[in-house]
Image (tube, rainbow, N blue to C red; front, side, top):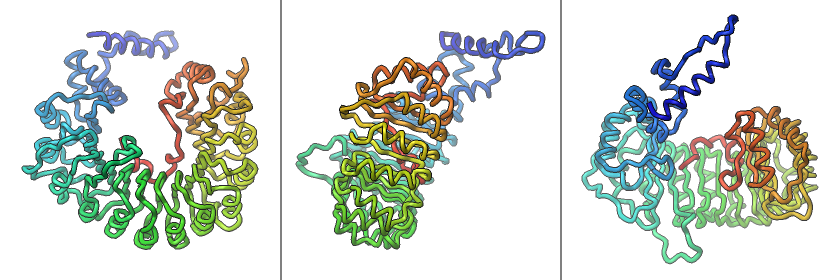
Length: 514
């Protein structure tokens, strides 16, 4: 036994001291980790990451056998930057597929160096229940030779492909077209974060028009940050994928909306349309027949839509549940007023107006007063004029809210009295699951009695899983409070975590990638 075993024995000893019988003796006295049955240790291991499980395998022969149980290897990432696992050679991976993964494997992530026809053949042969796969070509400068590839996992329902900037993938794709017609969820992830402002040349590294013919059963399509995706590609998918429920083209800046009318006319089941950071043109958006569509979830953040277009859109769309319309100069008080008077906000459960500087706090107060009780997500961040005063006013109305994002990273002229704010949140928002306060630490004012307000938030909001704060003195105070109550994973910093309204989307689990 090594140090890892000693730690487990200490945990077992401390746990045994929590229970006592009438004679003062614990039924777990002298219990150690070695006395636990294999199935209990297997269950404990299921809460660990694969990197930690590999470490446990070095403790002893028994733990090694349990750690290599195929039940622990259903969902595997072999990308070192994600999971910490690094497979040194193709031979090692082939052995893992055969011995450790087998029929239990449901999901696998492969980096470019492990994507070969031999590996894909082995996955097809030895892992018949593999339904989810991520292939990361993002760092590729050259592909392996797939000319001899004759087999590919044929039961895939979910596939994510991280594209390279310069590698053409049609040779690989041509080999897999016959195996992926059962796909229901497709992610094509581009290189948005790597793009420079001045592009020399844009390559269409994957042939979307051929891909759509091979995937007629798609329900969810996510095209994220791809610099060559345009309206013709949206038109191509809509012409063939009649079961389409969700289409996301976030940060595909060549999308203008010229095929929106055809998309809504063809895709009668389309409920979720995400177009954050695209180049939508108001005239194209206004041409679409929103009043006849089934869209319930819409993201148009970071676009240049006009006030006239926004009013036309929001007063025609019949049953909007989710709206993200932040960072739009045209979104102002008149849009909110027209929506309230001529639209149907009664079905709305999520509102994200991040950085909407042209909306007044009075207009927001009127809207939230009328519809706040139905909201499950409320994001009013990035605006310097929205301070704790507005939040203190509307918080008693947001009784059903699960997600709240407030504050701005910009320095304010006044201060935020965070103790009173926390007290109000804890008193009224008991269903809260995620909360983010983006205010600069220098603007937060709290007293020596702040622990009482934090205690109230922690005790009342028992479903709170994520509380994000800017790094500073108040963050340390809140973090220490939650850690003393053994809730060590709740409090996080804005440098490593952000809260989003996306988590209330009906297809959220399908949209998650990486």
